[in-house]
Image (cartoon, rainbow, N blue to C red; front, top):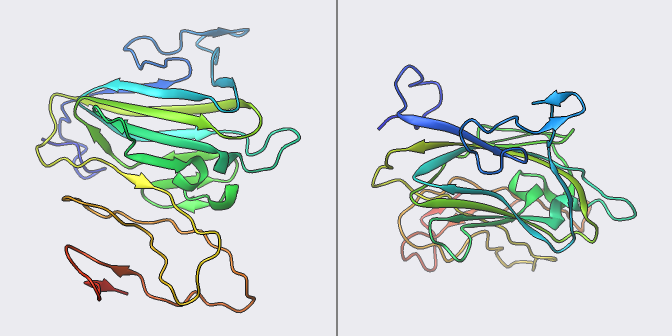
Length: 246
């Protein structure tokens, strides 16, 4: 089955059907895009975003029947609200559910998922994540699912979110390879790390898989600190010493 690299096999038939979900076509239904009308007429941004998401609310951004692969997610949102702090990117939480999961495979604040820590927009220029500070959050990780996919957004900000723009681009496929892996991501933090004690980036992972990376945001309490220290990977039964240390 083809379709799992970028430009290298673009000339091959991908055997997929492209779909896209946004506020205007929330189900991604074929032939249903651009139907909302504005003062300029049909297909002129009649429903470009989700409006006034209440504080404490959970909304489904996407609910897709599979098998398929999410290929691109784009989001833009105001980074602060009236009479509130500027931590909207930390106060909005993304959760992804694959197939029949009741616990999410992804549970990360919006900004941190897109490599923007502390609720601040950063310039990010990488293959899987690209961000421009004027509110363009892009994720290109391929995320396969066999039965269904659901993306949820929770507003933990004290105010409603006035406008939330998003688009989820995905492909429907006939079947996935047997060895197709699910995408997982988690977020953790420690308010003040302990001197001389290793900080755990990731733990409790079981089964076969591929580690794809970590985004780490930190601030220091001392003026002169050079970030020295090793990253240690304890694999398959490692105890006192890790297999990888660098």
